[in-house]
Image (cartoon, rainbow, N blue to C red; front, side, top):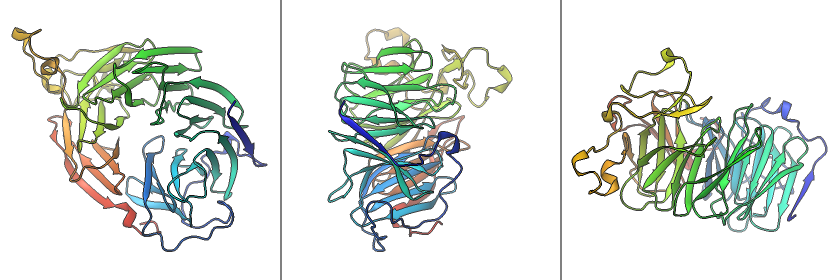
Length: 409
């Protein structure tokens, strides 16, 4: 095994997680070896941005430490600015006091081969994982810690840091991996051993499902909170496919465009009615999903989009073909079917937002038909879309968050 684990005495049990939330910015003499807070952090370089598990917050790793932001309302809730303290990975655990930190940036004193489990309530590192190669990603659940290397995924128990599972993957420099976050299900998706292949582990059911999602290499994928639906994109970036993770069937295929794009982020709305996609083309696309749950109460369905059933994915899944093609724009040309290229009959995006500047960004859904976009240029956008008519979205808010001061706003 190419990893070592160390724990500090008094590791926080999972039953206590979530008792403390970030409220006050400050410094810690325990983060490293007595670094003082850097009061001149305005030139901090942004190294990474990542959502927490329910998309209510995001973490920003910088060349001078890390910062935590609340999405609605937008405000900086917490920061640690340190000398020579760059973090390339900052992974939150919902809104609690636990973070996973991995060093990054030029001249950082923290190793990119080590994961620190940091308890900010106690202001100390409560566990470490050291590896022989660079850590590509870290994912947290209330009961598990998942560390992603380029060719392997490690799954640890949160309470005692014991190694539970090792999964070998194809080369995974992007650190692709995602988890479910329902308490009663533990689903993990990661690259398989072949190009375009995704391995889905249903740990509670002791079931492994291999999904041949794309012919090209994987660029991005995302699970619903319960882990039953998976959306995927390849490095071509033209098609997004939606799969049932239990049996591997493709439930829906949507088209971002006809030209190649690098997909940065994929996100489901909480009710699995919508799918958002961001890419290097500078446009955020929203697609209407057509998957449903068998046995859900008919009266609970939203009625905003005629002809479609938009439901939660909490039980068994069943594909649903829309009766009203206008709900998700597509071209229906039966008289030339089989002659025109496939994109003429593809499902195109329902709503779009064009970023003023093209930057690497992640996207998530907010409340009341809104999306939030966070860019590696330090930009934060909130936009709204019309759930009935779609089209161009309206910008509601813009913040250049790296320019905010250290106090919550």
